[in-house]
Image (cartoon, rainbow, N blue to C red):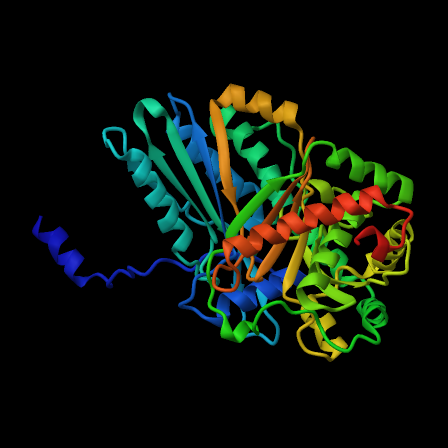
Length: 450
């Protein structure tokens, strides 16, 4: 005993600091990753609106060990979920991939709490407001709440810099498959990796693509702004107003798109353009549009996990003398000219334009992979009751079109800039405008909206 004690006293002091993780890859950033990193670092104390959250509600009984392992399997299979971001010691920011990261798992027992629902809401808020440190991965964490006879809730919180909505939908399916298999579905093949897309980006002709955007924005004297400059605004989570289209209008707009030979996306984007004209008085308007960013020529891109989305400007010239159907074709043709250049980062596009901020509103047509039958089967097998959640942007107004049997229009707005009444009236006006376009496809725009 004495010998052992003496040996311990004479031994070198043990290093209690955690070992630095092994870094297996260092990669450039995708265009939108650059923008989101800028927002995350701009004000370290401010709320980061690009923190995403989804809550999975499971019926009892829940195999918590299998669920935890299913979460770990996601991190093991997808390197992007382990990514951290560094900028201070590099000329341009990079993302680095550790070989492994500890699973960020938090567990609460609310099974005997009479206020379990309220405590779950508090957990969601706490997780949503806790900022990620971009250089300390993983930028995703999991919190499980045991709700006793009500089952359990898995709260998944991550930074948007890791994944887009398309990827999130893929991860839902994969998580449930792992959980159904007891923690790891060995039948899943090796996933296609996000680094393949980054390599594709590096091979593109950026100078030619920048020229496309300079042509698109040529002659534009100023941007389209609906609120004070960003420096005067604080970061807040948006309020939301949602409205379903009235009976028959969904089909009428699909028919309009068919007869005008344009996509349904073009129809709704014209509706948003006209809303901006009412707000600003401009006959030429600019807004941001999210594009999927997934190049169809890249093998396996539809199954990749990562942030492929990009935000690009859309310029619409609203001549009241142009027929509605002709205007729709003009809008689609103009957007089609930029298709091969949609990988260019917004900051680069804006810098080349040289007129300051181009826009402060965002248009989103939701387009995620959906296999309802497969998800229904997985939900039944795993006891999944529902998934709730969402994301946000820093824009004063974000107009979202949600496809379905009946299309839903969603307007996310900053309450400091717009009231609920104004936001609701704006959505109602978009619906009225869309109805007018559908009813007067062959009339001049000014006549259709009169």
